[in-house]
Length: 195
Image (cartoon, rainbow, N blue to C red):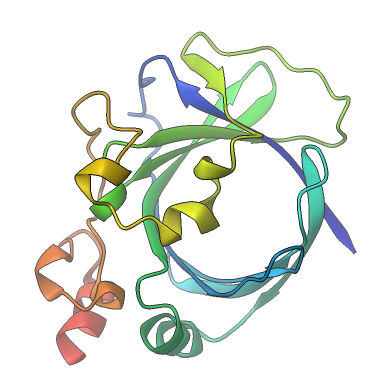
């Protein structure tokens, strides 16, 4: 059994990402019941996986992740995750020997940028980068599953405090709209055009 131990933060300001090209991530959620596991399907570049995540206990939770064929992930996202999709560009930044994941959300979540750090154990200390803002690890609204359920309406965009940071995509066919596909990912564009 794998354990995911991570902390999540908003950013005080966007760091220099020029050294990190970023990777497009599209993920959707199939099922979730109270106190049950979350089932997530993710496409990251040309790779796909299904992940089962247990309920959070402090900053940790059980996590099981398995690779699946890309075509299967596309079908699951398109048929079973409609409306429960998150699209983002992930940048990796090193700071004081630790790797930070900077997620710039797109589509209906445009304007949201978070930083996450995975830790070897819950007591592990780390040096905070100068661009780090307030911690939101325990704020369930910032969980990807909660974001996937958020409809993106103006009243639901509680995170929007400034113009959105540039993201590499807007989303794809999994929302049922081709117009928001980004030219940066021709594979997703082709999938959308074939839908």
